[in-house]
Image (cartoon, rainbow, N blue to C red; front, side, top):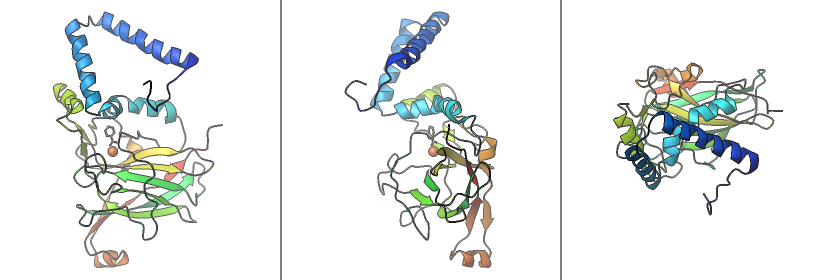
Length: 272
Ligand code: BEZ
Ligand code: FE
């Protein structure tokens, strides 16, 4: 990492993390009789992962749920879920009539996502910030799977005075880890599929509260019970309801059927 912009650990924590990791890996090599051939394969694989820019993907697939658990698993409020590799900071702040940025003919079904943000003891939080990002209806993320518009299906919005929000977007599709890259090839070699169930990502924050990073899933999704990352939590599985009555369409100024999702978030207080 030297010369890079990521700070590295120092002192006792570096000693603990690095030395303990090396100790575990050395013990692993001994107890599993790792051959030179396997050692060289591991080196080649990691070099390929780095060259393909897939280090965040690889680590997030296999390890991030544990980091999330250690850091957030015991907090009250809405369950957390991993951030994953596709978050981009500073998405546009969106205002009335709240809709995530979309291409002119954005594919997919309309999704009206609404809900409230409250404190863990039930107080509505006005002015809470929701930072949303998601795959499109083909499972693709802007900036990672397609270049423009840069902030497609990414945006930030604030709750109103009652702590409520609503935003128009599209129903996301499940995400498949690219088969051509080293992470996808590894999953194939393991005989595993490479899908995540469809999900909406959100970071929810408010002054005086810890930031919640989580994901919402959709009941009935074909990959809900076999997420390649193993991140689905029952309390984050939501139901979409389909609306096609003329009265409902008119109420929202829509010309085609839409899906609605209502979900309330609850934020843990800042850690003391
Ligand atoms: C995601 O949430 O989109 C994701 C998480 C881990 C690996 C790949 C994708
Ligand atoms: Fe995702």
